[in-house]
Length: 143
Ligand code: HEM
Image (cartoon, rainbow, N blue to C red):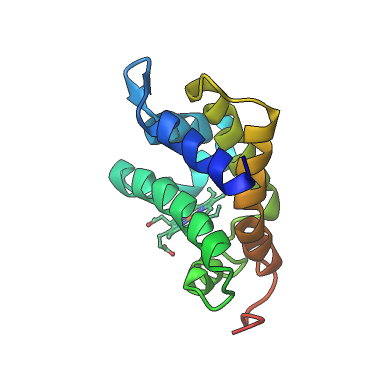
């Protein structure tokens, strides 16, 4: 199976499952907020529903960035809103986001193996590089 097939099958499995009464994105969200006081602080003034929406959206934004392979895609606006002048999401928080996602993947996907983990990492990687790259930049390169 290629990277996309491994990922698609795995995503289907994780979305079909609950653990401790929680669906995949809910478990991911709880783990991310618990992972660092800096994350909790970033969401201090955000209501819980919006926080959850953000995590689900961020996942699908990264996914479509990979699929469209288009730097023009509206990840632009998101990269600006997250840069040092706005939400100020420091680059290491994207690593934490990814590690939390992978840990949640292993909890939810009973057939997860190293090839599946790698597929998830490869698919999330371009969007994460894009977000980090624009952290210090005010104008968006490539637009
Ligand atoms: C992994 C890549 C990420 C993507 C694609 C992404 C995407 C989004 C989107 C679509 C929104 C709502 C629209 C907007 O306000 O621009 C949002 C809001 C937000 N994101 Fe992210 N996000 C990512 C990572 C992160 C990380 C690592 C943090 C760290 C805590 C974070 C913190 C926030 C905050 C604080 C908001 C504003 C919530 C509010 O008050 O409405 N994001 N993000």
